[in-house]
Image (tube, rainbow, N blue to C red; front, side, top):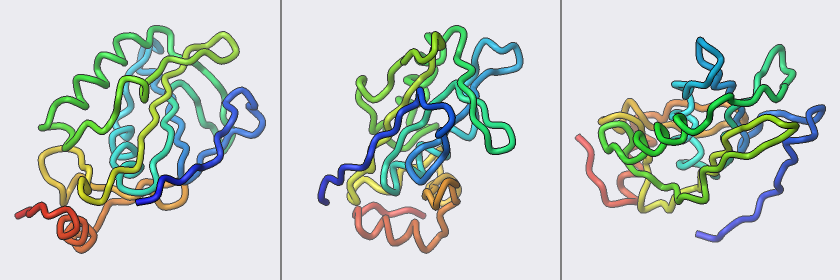
Length: 165
């Protein structure tokens, strides 16, 4: 599979922030405002891995189509939780990230977590959340994570040589 280069984006250009096929923003503020991993983040991880790859940025708020950098007060516990989940095969089928793919970045004096999710080789697909590929596999369509159909899962498993029940 050829390695495509896609344009990067500037997070500090707030006026032009938007989600796309390869960019997803999540607030990750939690009830107390100190930071919590959003549940939907893992659907995006699966979708990016099974499609073109992309960037998940935690600490950005969306309201009525407008984005603002809110930051994460204490990102270190969230980083630990990300790695625990990624390395738990009951929660994620494969950890496809390297240590350099998950970073704390600072913009406008606020800390964000940037997760680069590469597109995986067809032989590893599908990447899914939970124990069942049929309920936990996603694709990225535009700026949305879409649940993969049974037929799509079966096609991916044929290419990879994996068999699912």
